[in-house]
Image (cartoon, rainbow, N blue to C red; front, top):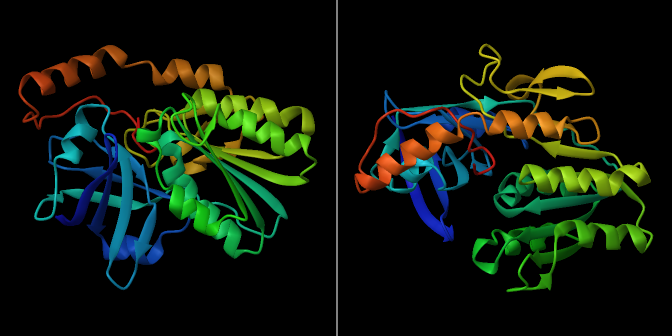
Length: 291
């Protein structure tokens, strides 16, 4: 059992949990994730490691409660725990001194962006950050991103806070003013990452996206998380989660992510009907980026 040390809501239906997992805390690197399972009949959920404290032996995760399993997770608190916490998984982010790097976080995607952006800054890069959400209530980690950024632009789709508009508009403005961007890292909903890649493509700005497809075993055995990158099949769990945004087949990714919508909806309806006390198994869907 992996005890939960802290659990709190940090935005609307967005939760932060600190979990005691000493071995993972000692070994994890920016960009890696873990897989959690609450009970022996529960779903395996991949989530990015947002932070770790090797001295305490803890890892921090942030997730959005949008499906049955993540809703179950949100009900857990200190005194509860996870049956399984497996990790660190995936390839760590490649970090070097690139020059000027733009980090773009959309919605819950700001959670996996934070550790990557922190490492990018510590490597001596100039860090320009763009953080966005649909509304003010869904915005997360603004203060944490501001603390490590040379410049930060905050956007909300509805204009309820900060700059009204999309993260892509803010990115285009940075490009238009002449910023010499060596690397763009975009993490968030698939449509957002695809849009960012289309903004940077004409300017030949290297763009990395972090993908969160349906994932089951997270070891490369099942093939559920396969994506096409540059015409080649890749498994996100072992070959990623980061890929060249200009090479990802986003259309295929969207279709694969919709494969179990009916089952997901049915599971959530049963969960809500039972008042949130249903702790059975469910279809395996990715919540690494908050799905």
